[in-house]
Structures are given as C-alpha cells and as structure tokens.
Picture 1 (cartoon, rainbow, N blue to C red):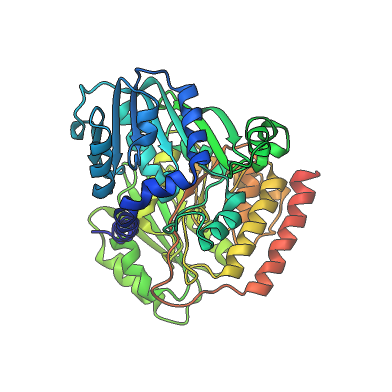
Picture 2 (picture 1 turned 120 degrees about the vertical axis):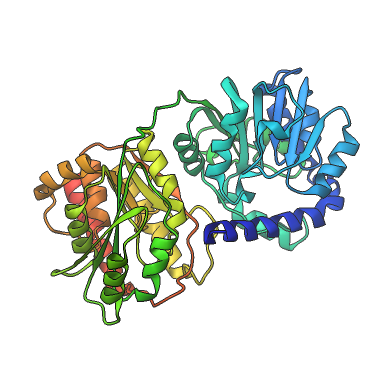
Amino acid sequence: MTLTAALQDNSKAITRSYFDRIAPELDRWNRRNRAYYRDLEIFHQFWIAPGSRVLEIGCGTGDLLAQVKPGLGVGIDFSAELVTIAQAKYPQLQFHCLDAETFSPADLETDGQSFDYIILSGVLGHLSNIQTVLQRLHLFSGPRTRLILTFHNYLWQPLLTAAEKIGQRRPQPPQSWLSMDDVQNLLSITGYQTVKTGRRFLCPKGIPGLAPIANRFLVQLPVINHLGLTNTIIARPAPAPAADPNLSCSVVIPARNEAGNIANAIDRLPRLGCHTEVIFVEGHSSDDTWDTIQRLVQKGHPHFKLKAFQQTGKGKADAVRLGFAQATGDILMILDADLTVQPEDLPHFFEVIASGRGEFINGARLVYPRSGEAMPWLNNLANKFFSLAFSFLLDQKLKDTLCGTKVIHRDDYDKLVAGRSYFGDFDPFGDFDLLFGATKLGLHLVDVPVRYQPRVYGSSNIAHVKEGLVLLKMCLYASKKIKFF
C-alpha cells in the first residue's frame, strides 16, 4: 500500500467511525435543525422530477433521497450503521454500504443504465479524495445526467464551530471547507461543466416573521447572496476530451539537503505517460544528497530514465530552469524533494493536462485539511493571503500560488522562456516566473488539490521573514508588469 493510500484510509477510518457512532442520534440532530434540512429538501424537489433515476452519495439515513420521490432511488454510504437505518426506514429504496472512491455499477442492483440525477449533499467536505469520487461518477452518468451539489459556505465556519460548542449543532469530524471556486475547479478538472450556481438559507433558526423573509427573499439579493449558508451547484458531464496516449513526462526534482528523501522519491513515483524521465538537480547540499543521487542514477531504474545535474547557480528557480532545459518529455513537472506533496498524487496532474482540461496545472495545498506540523498556522495564513493577492493580480483564480508542484507543456515552456525578457530575472523561487509567464501566454491555469504532508526527513529551507518580504515584492512586480501594465 502506498503512503497516500494509507493516509487516505486513515482519514476514511476516522470519518467512518464518527458516522457509525453518531448514526443512532443522526435523525434527532436533523430534527433539531429541521429548518435547514427542510430547505435542502425543497431545493432538491424543485430540480428533480418525481419518478427519476436518482443516486445519492453519502445518503445518511435516507431522508433526502426519499423526499425527491425517485422511480429508482439508490443511496450509498460507507457507514454500515447508517445504511441499516436507512433501509429499515425506506424499504422501497436501495441502500448500499460502499466507498464512493471505489464502487462500480456492478455493486448496485440496477439495470446498468445511467442515473438522471446524482446528489452530493453535505458530503464533499468528508471525502478523502474529491477528485477521485467525481471521476468515478462518470461511470453512472449519461450526457443528460445532472450532478446536484450542496455544501456549506466557508464564511459560516466560525458560526458553525461555535454552534457545535454550545450544543446547537452535532460535533463534526475533520473536514475540508470548500469555496464555490474550489468545487467548480474540481468539477472542471474531472470532466464536468457547471450549469448553475447559487446560495440559499440565511437564517438557520425558525424565527417567526424573519426566517421566511430572509431565507426566501433577502438571500437572493446581490451582495447579501454571498452570505447564504448553503452553496449550490448543478453540473453536467462535459464532452470528454481525448487524452493523448503518446505524451511523455519529465519530472524535475530540485534537492538540497534531502539525502533521506531521494530513494523514496523514486520508489513512490508512478509511471506518467508513455515514458517517464526523472531529473534530479542538486544544489550545494551540506549532506550526502549528491552522492545518494549518483548512486541511484548509476543503479538505474526499470521504468524511468534517470538524470542528475548539479547547480552552479543558487535557488530553486535556477534548479528548475536547469532541469527543464535538460528535459526531453512533452510534459514538464516539478516535484519538491521534501515530498510534502506526495509523488503518488502526480498522476492527477498528468491526467488533467493530458486531457486538455488545463494548460498550466498548479498544486493546491489549501483544499484538504492540513496538520499544524505540515503547515504551521502562520504559514497557512500567509499562503492564503498571497493566494488571494496573486489571484487578483493575475485575474485567475488560484488557491495556492506557493505550492512547489507545477506542470506545463514543454512547448508552452519554450514560449515562456522566449518571452522571459519581459519580466527579467526577478524570481528566486521559480513559482512566479512560471505563473507570470503562463498568465502572459494566456494559458488556462487550474488547481489540482493535494494532501500536504509533514516532512519525514530534514528541515525546511524557508526563511519566513526574508521570503515574506520577497513575496510582497513579487506582488508589486505583478502589479506593474501584469495588472497595471
């Protein structure tokens, strides 16, 4: 089992244990917040025609599925306790204890036809790999299938957390807090087209006079609409672009004082494309990183072509440029040698760019939950600030501009290099040289979420105050060269 799989299994085990434990009390909690759940029922009843074929992911005790009156209603949940309760309540519907990341049409007692509607209500934040689940739902979809997704507005996180503490909301397991942009990006990179977005439900408590007006009228007004508790998205499968099976890939791994991670970088790296090339670029290490790389290259690899170079310059930007200059693959990737972005996640990046769903792929560490060890609170705050700043300056939605994993076509990189004189040699990190260049080329930038992990070897090379000042300088530079040119 890979480390990524083990971490995801651990996340699932925690969430499953929580829902098994809460199952006998779930209906009681739902009745306590009946106004909220009734609003979800009204929303789904509006969009779903009675008698339709409906699949619900994360069905809980089955109430929502029953309320839309399906002709064929199928619910899946990975909590066996919840599935038992749901089947007892609604014997006319089908409920299965299955994992949304791995289940298949053969697991369901259906005739193999696609569903008219697939519901994901309040479940996205509990999934360990949202991208995998959305990709799998294509197996159950036809051209006219509609995905209906509802999830909490992240602006409500402080209020909902406070409600838990005073017993007005059931305690929650660790979960992802997703923005509307996050979910639309995930839909885009997994082959769906957003049809409609909206927000609902402004007043969670049934206050006479106020609640009906707020929840029916005020929440639909401009500006106030952004404060709605429930985000809603309706999406459809997009025409599938054909991925080029002949694309090769070069993975550049800049490494400074990372001797203990070199072997794992190769052992855990999946094959990418028709041919995978791995290029180590070592930069002035004080440990035996270079000797470790040389031994690995001399030993060779049955599936990868291995190369190694040493920097004469300094900094990650110089290392990336050297690696990309020596690369022969059609797709160029960066994998930081600290392995905080896991090698096992790289196929997600390759699939998105190979299918044409994005032209410059940016890793995003800020979607899934992160431990304080992996990303201390101050780093987390700084990453969010600079992501917002650069999204504004580049006029492209980016969740995490500082993630080291970035992917680009080699021919687009060649164009970027040819136009580099416009920006000059301004970036010691390398991230912004690529981001700014891709923006000026008009490339379609998309995020691929990753589960960010703590280091298992060595220590961070980041000088927080110094590099924070450099990032502020980058903002000013982007203002001058891109936003207000």
